[in-house]
Length: 204
Image 1 (cartoon, rainbow, N blue to C red):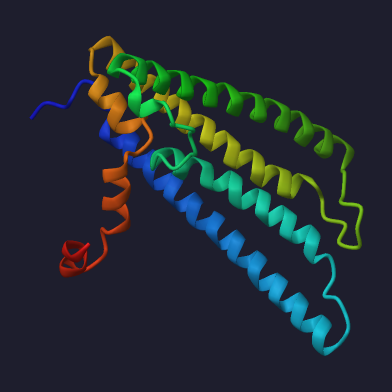
Image 2: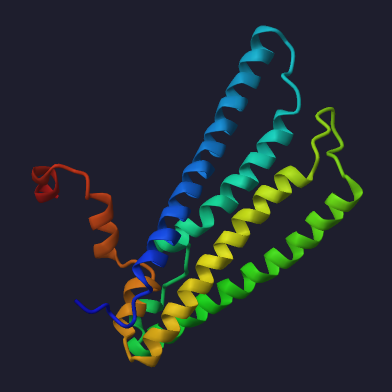
């Protein structure tokens, strides 16, 4: 059996997908931790009149980490927000060009984020910077987690760029539409109703 020439090697796709899914799970746990901390803070203030400490600071670190760690999963599942008011009305060639431009723009933006984030991380590492609070957390810890999320996101984007280039060279706009274009209405409905019983879906 021959492999489709426009598909990334199966091993690479599995690694990218599994890694992004695992990181998204960690990101979700970060958001859940924010909820737990916030509820605990509210209960503590209500019952004892005392604060648990720098909950706001921890929540900001967890939020930044949760977002950064989920970016690669959002890319893999075409979940990043795109303004597509005119997209569906464009001819196929212009839609393909729009998808490629969006991918390249996002890749460039992620590269800038990584470069600037590395500079900040290096300064914090060299100076031993700590948060200006009672927690006194070394800033390299939250910055390092955020930086790792951006780095993996950029790596996933570069994999997509290589695959898109191969698709263009082999004249496969269908691959680009399937992997890079924003999901259409039918795909969104199918995703939302995927786990519903068949009779509920048919009723709709």
